[in-house]
Length: 462
Image 1 (tube, rainbow, N blue to C red):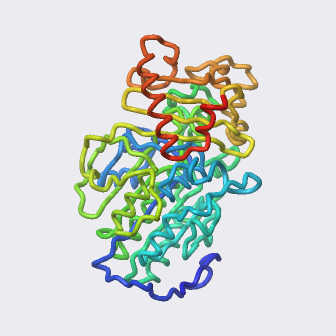
Image 2: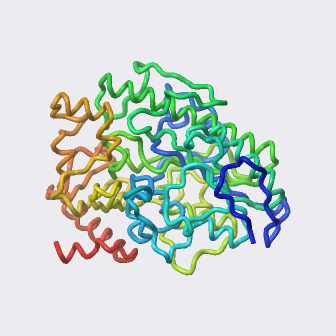
Image 3: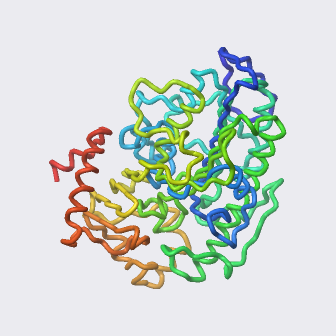
């Protein structure tokens, strides 16, 4: 029986051999890196200001996906999808796991770590866990000593080194999750030292203000702090890649880098507009061609099926909602990858606002099931200088939207995202788009029925 370590790495690992030992040559290891609240703020995604040399190197050695999507723009809910292969309306993790929010997955769910452990994998979680219950998503080892609340990714990488060295030739699944660049309530934890990290500072005048944010001094100041936190993440990723190289695992390890949801600003995180769910994804598969740019529309619900296929581990005894993208990693424009879906219900317990969406290459349809309610704010977004500037100035506009339009959403939103990428012109009541709307509504409802969405009852009750 495996020993479980729920304590920090203050003592050496003493890990018995796996029941199904494999030689190093047979190993297919997995490193899944999930950072917190990052968008496309990387050099490899075209941001010329931010310095992310290690992420850029990972992209250059593998595949950079341009059309990867989270299914929900909220931390716990998104992570539950990543680790289960089920949309969160089905797995039961409707919102945050921690504190009084207290959402948790259904007892029937078996998380990715358990499925890999069944196949003989040694499993290790470092950093943010943020799903529940623990027994559904449990890991053999929690290597969290000295990581400063998962805001020191360099130390996290060194903890990973100890885990990998101590397990010898056994195959491993490493779940590596920074708290950066999530806000530390209001700021970005840049006011404390992070041993081993060279802090990278940015001039607010140089940052790139995305279209969903107003270009103000407050926004620029926050973006400069945000960039600094991302540069910490980049250094941790660089150290982690060095650890894989030092331990002889560069050529037998699948590496995946994603963010759980969009940046921690109103207009992105907690919304299922594109800034909240259209996210970076870098993948490096052993033996693949380097420098691939892949335009397939992939979803984070596809991650568990992909990892199961790569490792050969068995799927659970219920159908998963995603599909493996392993076979298309080397391709640029694979056919049949042209649609994703989103499902959001809660962020914090006080933030009930169920939304379901379907997005194709040209259109996005959002169904706001509680459109009579004001759109709720996450506590950290409300307190941010970016939003408090809007409140203090009674600003009528928030970037391209009116504040009123941001807070009061219609029941149906339809956008031609090819012509209107900022999702500002709602075509739901446009007669010329009636056929498109009807088609997307029908497809969305069929998906809700197929994935056993409890909120499908709203079609009858409202």
